[in-house]
Amino acid sequence: MKKNIFICTALATMALSACSNNDNDPVVDTLKDTPIVINAGVNDLTTRAGYADDNLPTVIGLYITNPSNPAYTYKNYKMTYANNQWTTTDGTMMWQNATQTVSVVAYTPYNGTKNDELTDKAELSVSVQANQSTTDGLAVATSDFLYYKKDAVTPSTDGISLPMEHIFSKLLISFTHGSELNGKTVVIKNVTVSGMQTTHKFNLSTGALVTGGLSGDAVDIVMYLQDGTAPIVKTAEAILVPQTVAITVTIAATVDTEEKTFSYTADLQEFATKTQYTLALAVGRDGVQTGTFDINPWGKPVEGGNLETTENK
Image 1 (spheres, rainbow, N blue to C red):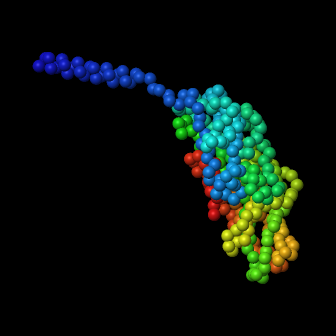
Image 2 (spheres, rainbow, N blue to C red; image 1 turned 120 degrees about the vertical axis):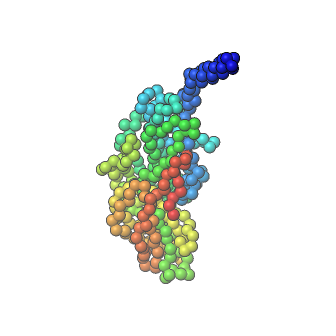
Protein backbone atom coordinates (compact mmCIF):
# COMPACT_ATOMS: atom_id res chain seq x y z
CA MET A 1 0.00 0.00 0.00
CA LYS A 2 2.77 2.43 0.87
CA LYS A 3 4.47 1.64 -2.42
CA ASN A 4 1.36 2.44 -4.37
CA ILE A 5 0.91 5.74 -2.56
CA PHE A 6 4.52 6.67 -3.27
CA ILE A 7 4.16 5.97 -6.98
CA CYS A 8 0.95 7.98 -7.24
CA THR A 9 2.54 10.85 -5.36
CA ALA A 10 5.59 10.81 -7.65
CA LEU A 11 3.43 10.80 -10.75
CA ALA A 12 1.40 13.69 -9.44
CA THR A 13 4.58 15.65 -8.71
CA MET A 14 5.85 15.01 -12.24
CA ALA A 15 2.54 16.17 -13.75
CA LEU A 16 2.59 19.38 -11.71
CA SER A 17 6.18 19.96 -12.70
CA ALA A 18 5.33 19.50 -16.39
CA CYS A 19 2.46 21.99 -16.13
CA SER A 20 4.71 24.46 -14.37
CA ASN A 21 7.35 24.16 -17.09
CA ASN A 22 4.76 24.73 -19.87
CA ASP A 23 3.46 27.83 -18.11
CA ASN A 24 6.96 29.28 -18.14
CA ASP A 25 7.55 28.66 -21.86
CA PRO A 26 7.94 32.01 -23.69
CA VAL A 27 5.10 33.10 -26.03
CA VAL A 28 6.35 33.48 -29.60
CA ASP A 29 5.24 36.72 -31.31
CA THR A 30 4.87 35.54 -34.89
CA LEU A 31 4.19 39.05 -36.24
CA LYS A 32 7.09 40.92 -34.65
CA ASP A 33 9.09 42.69 -37.39
CA THR A 34 7.23 40.87 -40.16
CA PRO A 35 6.37 42.70 -43.42
CA ILE A 36 2.91 44.25 -43.76
CA VAL A 37 0.93 42.93 -46.71
CA ILE A 38 -1.35 45.40 -48.53
CA ASN A 39 -4.57 44.00 -50.00
CA ALA A 40 -6.22 46.46 -52.38
CA GLY A 41 -7.51 44.49 -55.35
CA VAL A 42 -8.67 46.48 -58.36
CA ASN A 43 -10.90 43.90 -60.05
CA ASP A 44 -14.27 45.49 -59.23
CA LEU A 45 -13.35 48.75 -60.95
CA THR A 46 -13.77 47.07 -64.34
CA THR A 47 -17.53 47.03 -63.81
CA ARG A 48 -17.69 50.82 -63.80
CA ALA A 49 -18.02 52.87 -66.93
CA GLY A 50 -14.86 54.86 -67.50
CA TYR A 51 -12.59 52.05 -66.34
CA ALA A 52 -11.05 49.31 -68.44
CA ASP A 53 -8.46 46.65 -67.75
CA ASP A 54 -5.67 48.90 -69.00
CA ASN A 55 -6.48 52.05 -66.99
CA LEU A 56 -7.17 50.75 -63.49
CA PRO A 57 -5.53 52.65 -60.60
CA THR A 58 -2.07 51.20 -60.12
CA VAL A 59 -0.55 53.76 -57.72
CA ILE A 60 -1.79 54.78 -54.28
CA GLY A 61 -0.39 56.83 -51.41
CA LEU A 62 -0.26 55.09 -48.03
CA TYR A 63 0.23 56.31 -44.46
CA ILE A 64 0.60 53.79 -41.62
CA THR A 65 0.93 55.49 -38.22
CA ASN A 66 2.10 53.60 -35.12
CA PRO A 67 1.15 55.75 -32.09
CA SER A 68 3.65 54.08 -29.74
CA ASN A 69 6.76 53.69 -31.88
CA PRO A 70 7.69 56.05 -34.76
CA ALA A 71 10.16 53.46 -36.10
CA TYR A 72 7.09 51.54 -37.33
CA THR A 73 5.41 54.58 -38.89
CA TYR A 74 5.42 54.91 -42.71
CA LYS A 75 4.59 58.23 -44.34
CA ASN A 76 3.20 58.65 -47.85
CA TYR A 77 4.70 55.46 -49.22
CA LYS A 78 4.06 55.10 -52.93
CA MET A 79 2.43 51.72 -53.53
CA THR A 80 2.45 50.28 -57.05
CA TYR A 81 0.25 47.46 -58.35
CA ALA A 82 1.84 44.91 -60.69
CA ASN A 83 1.76 41.14 -61.08
CA ASN A 84 -1.31 40.90 -58.83
CA GLN A 85 0.34 42.51 -55.82
CA TRP A 86 1.02 45.90 -54.23
CA THR A 87 4.68 46.72 -53.60
CA THR A 88 6.80 49.78 -52.82
CA THR A 89 10.39 50.83 -53.34
CA ASP A 90 10.15 53.29 -50.43
CA GLY A 91 11.18 50.67 -47.87
CA THR A 92 9.90 47.63 -45.97
CA MET A 93 6.83 48.25 -43.81
CA MET A 94 6.66 46.00 -40.74
CA TRP A 95 4.37 45.23 -37.82
CA GLN A 96 5.89 46.14 -34.47
CA ASN A 97 4.31 43.06 -32.88
CA ALA A 98 1.07 41.08 -32.79
CA THR A 99 -0.84 43.53 -30.59
CA GLN A 100 0.16 47.12 -31.42
CA THR A 101 -2.56 48.66 -33.60
CA VAL A 102 -1.91 51.26 -36.30
CA SER A 103 -3.88 53.97 -38.13
CA VAL A 104 -4.15 53.81 -41.92
CA VAL A 105 -4.82 56.43 -44.60
CA ALA A 106 -4.76 55.59 -48.31
CA TYR A 107 -5.61 57.67 -51.37
CA THR A 108 -5.22 57.96 -55.13
CA PRO A 109 -4.07 59.73 -57.30
CA TYR A 110 -0.72 59.90 -55.50
CA ASN A 111 0.64 63.29 -54.45
CA GLY A 112 4.05 64.40 -53.18
CA THR A 113 6.93 62.21 -52.01
CA LYS A 114 7.88 59.70 -49.34
CA ASN A 115 7.89 61.06 -45.74
CA ASP A 116 5.48 63.90 -46.48
CA GLU A 117 3.76 64.62 -43.18
CA LEU A 118 0.06 63.80 -43.08
CA THR A 119 -0.62 67.08 -41.28
CA ASP A 120 0.95 68.95 -44.21
CA LYS A 121 -1.83 67.64 -46.46
CA ALA A 122 -4.69 69.33 -44.63
CA GLU A 123 -5.43 71.34 -47.80
CA LEU A 124 -4.46 68.94 -50.56
CA SER A 125 -5.46 70.28 -53.98
CA VAL A 126 -7.74 67.81 -55.78
CA SER A 127 -9.34 68.27 -59.17
CA VAL A 128 -11.05 66.72 -62.17
CA GLN A 129 -10.13 67.02 -65.83
CA ALA A 130 -12.20 69.33 -68.01
CA ASN A 131 -12.05 66.96 -70.98
CA GLN A 132 -13.18 63.52 -69.86
CA SER A 133 -14.24 62.35 -73.31
CA THR A 134 -11.23 60.18 -74.25
CA THR A 135 -12.42 56.95 -75.85
CA ASP A 136 -10.57 54.71 -73.39
CA GLY A 137 -12.17 56.39 -70.36
CA LEU A 138 -8.75 57.25 -68.94
CA ALA A 139 -9.68 60.87 -68.15
CA VAL A 140 -12.70 59.71 -66.14
CA ALA A 141 -10.57 57.25 -64.18
CA THR A 142 -7.87 59.87 -63.57
CA SER A 143 -10.46 62.33 -62.26
CA ASP A 144 -11.79 59.86 -59.69
CA PHE A 145 -10.29 60.69 -56.28
CA LEU A 146 -10.42 57.63 -53.98
CA TYR A 147 -9.80 57.61 -50.23
CA TYR A 148 -9.72 55.28 -47.22
CA LYS A 149 -9.11 55.83 -43.51
CA LYS A 150 -9.24 53.50 -40.52
CA ASP A 151 -7.96 53.79 -36.96
CA ALA A 152 -6.82 50.97 -34.66
CA VAL A 153 -6.05 48.40 -37.36
CA THR A 154 -5.10 45.13 -35.66
CA PRO A 155 -1.95 43.35 -36.88
CA SER A 156 -2.72 40.29 -38.98
CA THR A 157 -0.97 37.82 -41.25
CA ASP A 158 -3.73 38.65 -43.75
CA GLY A 159 -2.35 42.19 -44.06
CA ILE A 160 -4.28 45.45 -44.40
CA SER A 161 -7.33 45.80 -46.66
CA LEU A 162 -8.03 49.15 -48.32
CA PRO A 163 -11.68 49.35 -49.49
CA MET A 164 -11.48 52.89 -50.85
CA GLU A 165 -14.47 55.13 -51.57
CA HIS A 166 -15.23 57.98 -53.97
CA ILE A 167 -14.85 61.52 -52.68
CA PHE A 168 -16.23 63.35 -55.72
CA SER A 169 -19.66 63.26 -57.40
CA LYS A 170 -20.59 61.31 -60.49
CA LEU A 171 -23.02 62.49 -63.17
CA LEU A 172 -24.54 59.92 -65.52
CA ILE A 173 -26.89 61.06 -68.31
CA SER A 174 -28.91 58.69 -70.48
CA PHE A 175 -30.32 59.77 -73.83
CA THR A 176 -33.39 58.54 -75.68
CA HIS A 177 -35.10 59.84 -78.86
CA GLY A 178 -38.44 61.61 -78.85
CA SER A 179 -41.13 60.03 -81.05
CA GLU A 180 -40.83 62.88 -83.58
CA LEU A 181 -37.36 61.56 -84.44
CA ASN A 182 -38.59 58.06 -85.28
CA GLY A 183 -37.23 56.96 -88.62
CA LYS A 184 -34.45 59.54 -88.56
CA THR A 185 -30.76 58.86 -88.14
CA VAL A 186 -29.63 60.59 -84.97
CA VAL A 187 -25.97 60.58 -83.93
CA ILE A 188 -24.97 62.14 -80.61
CA LYS A 189 -21.40 63.35 -81.12
CA ASN A 190 -20.52 65.37 -78.05
CA VAL A 191 -21.99 66.21 -74.62
CA THR A 192 -20.80 68.93 -72.28
CA VAL A 193 -21.91 70.02 -68.82
CA SER A 194 -21.18 73.67 -68.10
CA GLY A 195 -21.00 75.82 -64.99
CA MET A 196 -18.69 73.50 -63.00
CA GLN A 197 -15.61 74.48 -61.02
CA THR A 198 -12.97 71.76 -61.21
CA THR A 199 -10.70 72.20 -58.15
CA HIS A 200 -11.22 71.72 -54.41
CA LYS A 201 -9.15 71.24 -51.25
CA PHE A 202 -9.20 67.99 -49.28
CA ASN A 203 -8.02 67.24 -45.74
CA LEU A 204 -6.17 63.93 -45.96
CA SER A 205 -6.19 63.54 -42.16
CA THR A 206 -9.94 63.92 -41.65
CA GLY A 207 -11.15 62.61 -45.00
CA ALA A 208 -13.29 65.68 -45.70
CA LEU A 209 -13.37 68.42 -48.31
CA VAL A 210 -12.23 71.74 -46.86
CA THR A 211 -14.98 74.27 -46.24
CA GLY A 212 -14.54 77.13 -48.70
CA GLY A 213 -11.97 75.12 -50.66
CA LEU A 214 -13.77 75.20 -54.01
CA SER A 215 -11.82 77.26 -56.53
CA GLY A 216 -11.24 78.03 -60.19
CA ASP A 217 -13.39 79.43 -62.98
CA ALA A 218 -16.53 77.62 -64.08
CA VAL A 219 -15.77 75.60 -67.21
CA ASP A 220 -17.38 73.22 -69.66
CA ILE A 221 -16.69 69.56 -68.85
CA VAL A 222 -16.72 67.30 -71.90
CA MET A 223 -18.35 64.01 -70.89
CA TYR A 224 -17.39 60.42 -71.72
CA LEU A 225 -19.81 58.88 -74.25
CA GLN A 226 -20.77 55.23 -74.56
CA ASP A 227 -23.42 53.33 -76.49
CA GLY A 228 -26.56 52.55 -74.53
CA THR A 229 -28.96 49.63 -74.44
CA ALA A 230 -32.30 50.21 -76.19
CA PRO A 231 -34.26 52.37 -75.76
CA ILE A 232 -31.25 54.33 -74.46
CA VAL A 233 -29.09 55.33 -77.44
CA LYS A 234 -26.16 56.89 -75.55
CA THR A 235 -24.93 57.48 -72.03
CA ALA A 236 -22.62 60.29 -70.94
CA GLU A 237 -20.54 60.21 -67.77
CA ALA A 238 -18.33 62.66 -65.87
CA ILE A 239 -16.72 62.96 -62.46
CA LEU A 240 -17.57 66.29 -60.81
CA VAL A 241 -16.05 68.19 -57.90
CA PRO A 242 -18.82 68.50 -55.26
CA GLN A 243 -20.60 71.86 -55.38
CA THR A 244 -24.05 73.43 -55.71
CA VAL A 245 -24.77 74.71 -59.20
CA ALA A 246 -27.39 74.94 -61.96
CA ILE A 247 -25.74 72.98 -64.76
CA THR A 248 -26.42 73.28 -68.46
CA VAL A 249 -26.13 70.15 -70.58
CA THR A 250 -25.33 70.76 -74.25
CA ILE A 251 -25.68 67.98 -76.84
CA ALA A 252 -24.06 68.23 -80.27
CA ALA A 253 -25.72 65.82 -82.71
CA THR A 254 -26.60 65.18 -86.32
CA VAL A 255 -30.15 64.43 -87.44
CA ASP A 256 -30.11 62.92 -90.93
CA THR A 257 -26.68 64.54 -91.42
CA GLU A 258 -27.96 67.97 -90.31
CA GLU A 259 -25.91 69.49 -87.49
CA LYS A 260 -28.02 70.16 -84.40
CA THR A 261 -27.34 71.52 -80.92
CA PHE A 262 -29.67 70.78 -78.02
CA SER A 263 -29.40 72.12 -74.49
CA TYR A 264 -31.00 71.65 -71.11
CA THR A 265 -30.52 73.78 -67.97
CA ALA A 266 -31.32 72.12 -64.66
CA ASP A 267 -32.52 73.77 -61.48
CA LEU A 268 -29.99 74.58 -58.78
CA GLN A 269 -28.65 71.23 -57.58
CA GLU A 270 -26.22 70.16 -54.88
CA PHE A 271 -23.67 67.66 -56.19
CA ALA A 272 -22.58 66.01 -52.95
CA THR A 273 -19.52 63.95 -52.12
CA LYS A 274 -19.73 60.15 -52.61
CA THR A 275 -22.96 60.53 -54.58
CA GLN A 276 -24.11 59.56 -58.08
CA TYR A 277 -26.64 61.63 -60.02
CA THR A 278 -28.51 60.08 -62.94
CA LEU A 279 -30.45 62.21 -65.39
CA ALA A 280 -32.64 60.91 -68.23
CA LEU A 281 -32.94 63.19 -71.26
CA ALA A 282 -35.19 62.70 -74.29
CA VAL A 283 -33.87 64.46 -77.39
CA GLY A 284 -36.68 65.79 -79.60
CA ARG A 285 -36.88 67.71 -82.84
CA ASP A 286 -36.92 71.11 -81.18
CA GLY A 287 -35.50 70.54 -77.72
CA VAL A 288 -34.88 68.28 -74.77
CA GLN A 289 -37.38 66.81 -72.33
CA THR A 290 -36.35 65.54 -68.92
CA GLY A 291 -37.36 64.33 -65.51
CA THR A 292 -35.63 64.92 -62.19
CA PHE A 293 -32.26 63.74 -60.92
CA ASP A 294 -32.13 60.22 -59.53
CA ILE A 295 -29.74 60.44 -56.56
CA ASN A 296 -27.97 57.43 -55.00
CA PRO A 297 -24.84 56.69 -52.97
CA TRP A 298 -21.90 56.13 -55.30
CA GLY A 299 -20.47 52.73 -54.45
CA LYS A 300 -20.27 51.14 -51.00
CA PRO A 301 -16.81 50.06 -49.84
CA VAL A 302 -16.53 46.57 -48.37
CA GLU A 303 -13.75 45.25 -46.13
CA GLY A 304 -11.82 42.45 -47.77
CA GLY A 305 -9.34 43.86 -50.24
CA ASN A 306 -11.17 45.79 -52.95
CA LEU A 307 -10.42 49.37 -53.82
CA GLU A 308 -14.15 49.85 -54.21
CA THR A 309 -17.29 47.93 -54.96
CA THR A 310 -19.47 48.04 -58.06
CA GLU A 311 -21.62 51.10 -58.57
CA ASN A 312 -25.28 51.20 -57.58
CA LYS A 313 -27.56 50.47 -60.47
